[in-house]
Image (tube, rainbow, N blue to C red; front, top):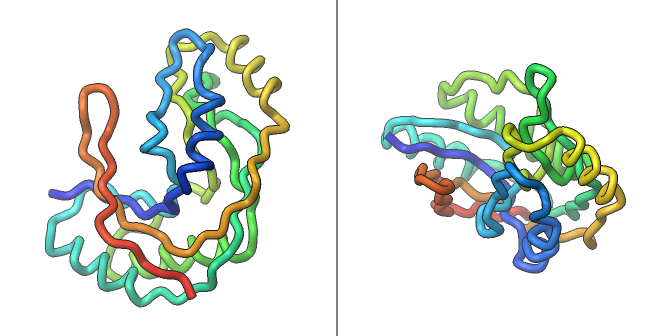
Length: 178
């Protein structure tokens, strides 16, 4: 079985800017900079033959290159507790269209539709063990974070290998944008 997801990789300079935000919250589990990405669609565990179908479907996607702008720090909550810190991506028509094309391509090869609404972001930390007031202060302190926009020229199919400290993400196939 392969554990897969489709995402936008980030350039090294953006990863460095995001990494500079990390730290200062006891109990937070910070994402290693090499794992920063913007998920377009989590696929999960699938058989190798199905992964070949996923690759073939993603290879048919035609979409233009576009600028991606990150803006501000936010949180995701579950059951009233903050589960993670993230940097939000500004919604754009090009980003939404690309994500929709990825979703359609995956459904065509028989994957179940994604149930969650697309909320473009880059995860900074898992925070279920951090104190809420420290997380709120962090979000307030970094609410104006805005690195320069980056040009998105491709999207990537990644495999995810779960490890003790952090998952290891392997770029399997890059798909160029026009």
